[in-house]
Amino acid sequence: MTNTEDPVGIAAPTATELLYKEKLIRILQGAYSGELAAAYAYEGHWKASKKQEERETIARIEREEWHHRSLVGDMLTNLGSGPDPEQERKRNRIGKTLRALCNVSGWFMPMYAAGRLESYNVIEYEDAANYARLAGYGQFAPALIEMADVEREHERYFRMKVESHFLRHIFPKWKIPQ
Ligand SMILES: [Fe+2]
Ligand SMILES: [Fe+2]
Image (cartoon, rainbow, N blue to C red):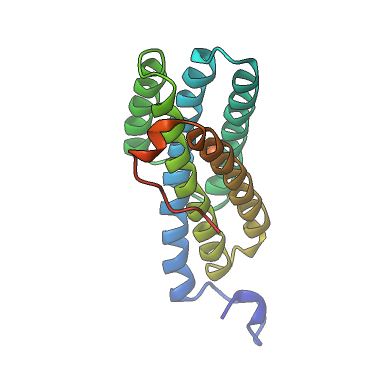
């Protein structure tokens, strides 16, 4: 039962809502730090690309990830929480490593890694929207669904790139988000 359905009026969150709130915070902390890693990796990715279209599109995707990070950060503040320092450290390192690797890893690998990651991001934000509703924070759901939709577009873009390359026959396909 959510607070708004409580016939008595204003009620404290139920034990179930508190459990879902904990899950929501964990998933948002993961997404918040994940956006940092993604943004750094995409910065390296677009700067390493020689094609104008790729430079522009991936730079836009990078901006969208920074925007997501800021929205998710606000949600965490609203929940009375904040980033997980351990995740921040870890993803910061991963992001900067990927950013540096873009110069040496060729064309295919960053496109492939990005597509795989984006397919996971879609599910992550959809799960977060479900947990938000269950935790009594349904007001977050529209923004989370919108972020899932943007991640879906990112996934489609990188999948299109991967499918244009012969190495697609060698690398396993990731699950296409519905
Ligand atoms: Fe994102
Ligand atoms: Fe993305």
